[in-house]
Image (cartoon, rainbow, N blue to C red):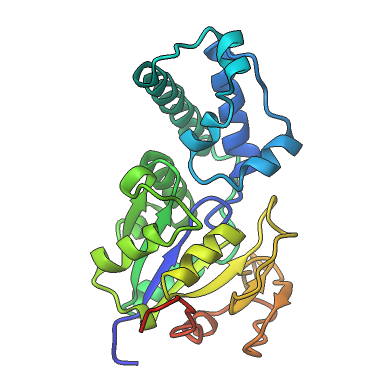
Length: 268
């Protein structure tokens, strides 16, 4: 293919497995600090990860009973301001957790990103998380020097969150990328659906809350990208419709084979 290849990573669950040990405790600490009568359990949060965006997850709380119990305003603008304040504080807590180094990057991300950068690929992250949160995880996952090579599309840059294709449509447009030469790495069904709807080839690396989701349509589904010795982590291949056989770890060439495998409706 003559077009410059592009590799676009989702953030949470792909660069690092951040939901259980990063976002969830950050949400709950925020609720405690604001005196809100809720704490999300692991089981409850496992269901909420299907809701794209932190503010959107917080808004699932805003039933009439909850608003009354928490003493929240009825005025929509005032309520929006409350949620925005919660989310700003949650982002501060979360970035502190990431900076503390308690959550390791996922295997293979730095290796493949470095190889792609050396090979002239365009690199990006596309996520519904707030941009400061995304940049903190990106620095952790690939290192600050390589992180500068990435474009970041995050948070409220689009109105419709995944599974809508908007974030990936925006990334392709801003990068000047060719859809047929662009590959996405996702960890959730919603993310995969967004990538496919944007006409992009998609690999899935399952994460803590997504392992049992339906990834029909992905060109590759693995437990992780994996790494060779001495950091060796073995990739479990869960779906390989193209017959790539990326054991014991996924290589950049495996992802390159996914170019042109998007299935967007109505796209060339």
